[in-house]
Figure (cartoon, one colour):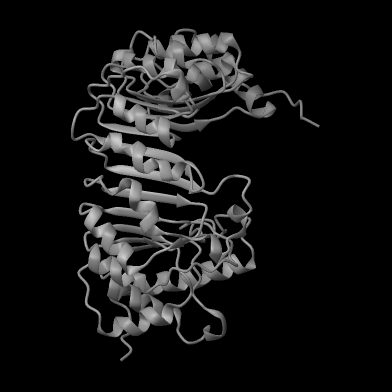
Amino acid sequence: MQSRTPLRLPNASVWQRFLEYASLVREITYLSGTSVGELRVLQAVSTSFLRSFPRRVLLPNLQVLGLHLRSPSTIPFLSPSLHRIGLCITLDTSPEVQNLALEAIQNMPNLSAFYLDSDVDIVKRLCKIRNAKNIQEVTIGEPIDMEELTLLQSFSDLRVLSICTDIDPQSGLAPLSFPNLEKLEINGFAYTTALLVHDMQLRPQREICVVLEATMDDSYPSLISVLGCLQTSTLQTIRINVEYQYDAFMKYSWGVDTSIRLEKLLQPIVHFRNLKRLILDLRIPLEVFPDDIKALAVAFPSILEMELGPATWVPSSYETPVSPSCLLEFAQQLPQLLMLAIYLNGRWEDLIEICASFSSNSQLQHLNVGGSILNHGANACDYTSRDVAKALITVFPKLKHLHFAYECSAETDNWERSTADAADRAIAGAWMAVREVLSEVHTGCMVQNG
């Protein structure tokens, strides 16, 4: 049962002391007010403040705010001083509150960026605010239609645009112009996304991030022809989410017979020569051979960051066909690479043995091994975490950051993912030991063993 204890509200003298500190607040990352208790407190406090200071702003120098817009009690946080704002608007946000928020936003002369996650039709109204010309960065979390996308052109000085869309290309795509756009991120189905980027008439040398949804059974092969319309574009970042058809059993089986070779995944995008970041977010196992990595190096000579396959999650029982020895090819063929995320199997003895005579000039600093296992079956004691760490630092001499799934937080000493089972925790524990050895290397404390 909810407690109905009366709230002790500040009196005028307390509010006066509050105002002395309120001017120091610059950022509130997220104010939800989602529970009954939070709403009650917010409503009471904001009402008390407005009664005491009807013409004062609660936080006069606030610059960054994340706000769940649910009741009039949240409106006093919409300070005219805001530079960046994130709004979450749900179906229970009344029209009155929506109107108050839009009016407050129009009175923010320094507002340059906003994030909107809305279940209601408010994008069209937001595009018509009188200070639209000042907005330089827009992120919209919910899918938008062609009319809304067209209206976004009212932000004439827009530099960064991030949207997701499920626009049906059969309904027609209007010409779009964003003359000052520097970074574009579109999340949507492959065919529509390719056409939208093509029609946006972007200036050369702009950074474009395209997030494509595709399936191996249907739309992914069509990317080869569809993405051809983007050949003249200076695409620098591309993310492709690939899976088998939703109703196919192989999506869930993770058997070796469902794996796909990296070479096939690269076919639709090899002509993007200026690519600096490649993300293949797969729901299917990946095969990587030396020839695939050589093809990567030839296709993307400027690549700096690469995420291949399910680097952050897979069932702990699944064994990928990708061997740790492929890291040697990455170091040799792509020495400029700064970040690599890849899921590897547990046959680390192959890499450890080869590393004895290996020399590398790789610039890699970040390695994400996801849920890769360290020990393989009966050979579990053939090598130690120290052996793996020494091999990694031989292949990647500038490696500073090792990331893996189910990491242990130094601040809370709790697992990042509460769902981690015993096997996952054991894997994370082994990688933690490798990370500790790497730390010793960078602090000069590692004991040299022969």
